[in-house]
Amino acid sequence: MGLTDNIRRFVFERYIMPAIDRGRDSITIRAGDVHSMMGLYSRMPAVCSALGSRKSIDLFNQWLRESGYNYRVLLASVKTPPSGQGANSYYTYKFVKNGEKKQIEPIISQQSPLELLTRDLINRVKSEDITEEVAREIMSSYIGIPLYKHRLDIYGKFKEFDLVNIEHRIVGDFKRFKYKGPAMAEMSNLVEYVWLMEKLEKYTNMQWRKIIVGAGNRKTFETFARRYDPWLEDLEIYFITNDRKIIKIR
Image (cartoon, rainbow, N blue to C red; front, side, top):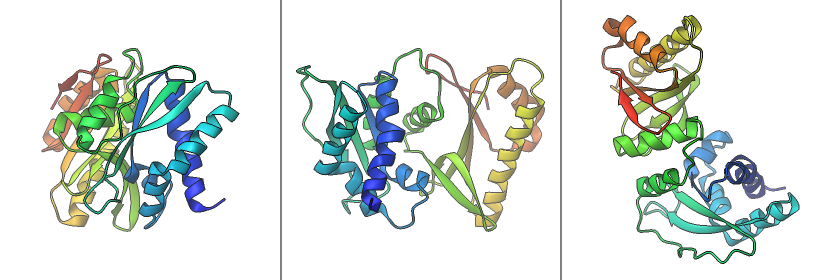
């Protein structure tokens, strides 16, 4: 199996099937996220080909049939940078039940990445937990800048963050804590990531917009902000409620 087919299989197993399993009727995928998650290097053309080609759609539908799914995949929209291929290429797929005559929009490129993400997010069911992917899309819409998962070089060691935009120098992480008692481990985890973001600023010799986004137990994040306030400086802390509302804690 070649690289492009490996990427297709990855997209199918990590994006397409889970989205259908959750009852969603569409999903928007950013090429840069796939490239990063697979640990690829300078293989963006292969990723874009795997996401946008007719062969990919045919294979996705074949694999769905072989896996017993009563759905088919349609490529609804594509948004690419001027180069035609790049990390900020967005591909939106719609899922239609076999036998259902559902009107599908033609492939369009007029919508911005944030419009695609927002439309995709609205289609989620209200009862779904706030996952990392959901939080990333909510924050992208909230701040008006696409965020993605990325590994950043900090003194020769690569650290992965959930909320990144290198062009706008934004770095952040998503934390979902459910524990109701004294959250010492959770506090330590938050401290570690704030420390890593500060190290990133020192290593790059640039100021970054630093963000922590939380879900689950709101009290943990409020306690953290209050307890460590003098040290946190310009760190922003947000909390996402179960009904998708954003509360700025700090």
